[in-house]
Image (cartoon, rainbow, N blue to C red; front, side, top):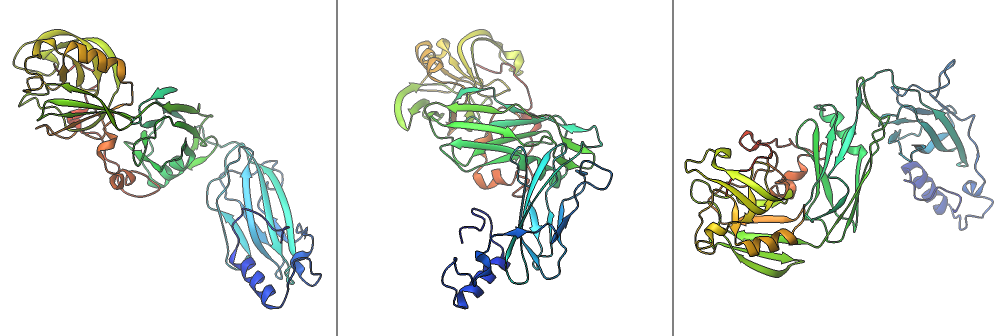
Length: 419
């Protein structure tokens, strides 16, 4: 049977015919009595398709592709269609093999190759390759996408982001967009997109990225119909990032100690102080957003009753609203013993310098046993890992559920918070 399609879904019809042929005593594909051993005939007279209409050089991308068996004694057994960019067109074959139609939108301004397999009343195979081009969309509304972060090396907690140029609210349209945003990694991991809001998606694996991984992100949205008068825009710039060693810093607020792990082995334990009552440090998993070095922090930024205005060194930002890990030489006496800060994690200058030199963007900073609330998933940095995998997947338009939006209380952007 070497002449049949390889790595292609087999239809019920063709499988049934194969079983019938075997039960009839056919023992070799080379037998002259087996019609499937024949060279495929040209099925041009057996099928039709709604390609470019008369007077048009290009097919209308607003209409689905349809292939029909014209001969009542024959049937379609398989159809595959893809464009020049390698994007396959999903479709559905009728149970009786009389018709195949696309179930996904055609891309605009694209060239398609369609391979049709048929069989006649005697079971002999036919083949026909169709080619056609689609025209440009009639609408000017385009949806563009930009990926983040910028290319580089990050910690294993770094999510991938996709920013859309227009809001997409309809669930079916979101599914079209999401299906076109491709993420692959080496080594491969299970991951999913989550709609943060109408214009932003985050992608993360079930667990943290593997250490020393390569992650590639690209968009197949170009020319794809998303909804009425809305099409995928120009070609998005692909993104490649890599991950470094797995580095996780766990702060136990009740024990006043940070333990730093590198590839699951402890490399340093640091006495710290975290937020005092009323300014408790947030619990949960945070991702290093930036290494900002020297930062001025004032009580006015959080409305603290007690005044402070300090220049703080070795500052590593973990929330948009201003939570840092930083040097706090003024509280060395409390580090390892009491929580006296306004929400940040403070440590000695020596330990802060080491921490600053050791971590990178995307590394994990986790706080446990604090009196504070849990870090919100969105709106205040990357709290993505505070959603378990089941809840994360509900934010995918391809899986089900409703995305969780950012909490209003955590929507502050990039301002120093506390010491």
